Amino acid sequence: MLTTITNIISTIFIITGLFFVLVGTIGLLRFPDFYTRMHATGKCDTLGEGLMLVGLMVYQGFDLISVKMLFLVIFIFVANPVATHAIARRAYKVGLEAWRLEK
Amino acid sequence: MKGDESVIVRTVIRLMAPFIQIYGLYVIFHGGGGPGGGFQGGVILAASIILYVMAFGIEEGQAKLTEKINMIMRTTGLLIYSGIGALAILFGGKFLDYGAVPLPFIHHIPEVRAILIDGGVEVGVGITVMAVMVTLFYEFYPGGSIDD
Image 1 (tube, rainbow over the protein chains, first blue to last red):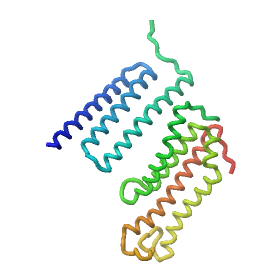
Image 2: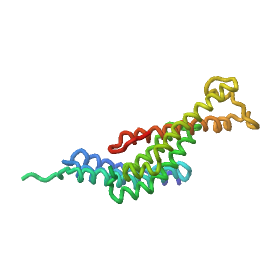
Image 3: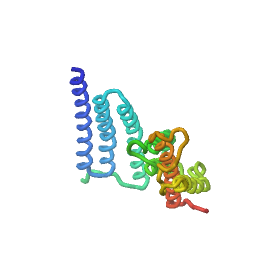
Image 4: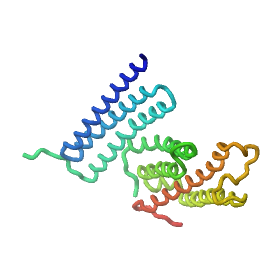
């Protein structure tokens, strides 16, 4: 019984994470230029991977492997936005023009 | 060339570099019983230094890890590695034949032997790989100069 509940909770987490990753991938493929693509992938990847790892943690139960996954979640939540920020800032400093709707 | 990354990047790299180094040590010492090893751990250790230099500039990075200490680490790691290999020859085995090296008291436990001897080799490889990676990065960094 408990296993079933755990499986359902972890499946919900993983499917939610998959949804975010799917949206981020569609944004990466469909958006017109660098900044908007970065906007799509930066946030969606962070949240999607985080939710999927939380789902795997629930599935695994409390042991050493799930603690390692917790460290991984923390690391992704710190590192991924900073990397996105660094890349976008560098592109802005180099002088990449943002996309505008042509009239 | 001075590092001109933003405050966010510098703060996060300063926070994260020790954890990256601990993870590198974990990978080095975990190599006996799972995925990992000296080479991979050394590369992760070097990545923390490279990250630091990318954020703070080459002068600050070389103040943390000077070229002289880097050179000493390069040669010391190689000396540890080949020294343990030659120790096996000294006791009558082949090069890097760990089974030939006699250890006092714990001679019959293979795990202890693996941790002591293989751990020594992995540490040597890790130190050398880290120093060589950092040296390559210093060499290729724009504005960085090597004078040894």
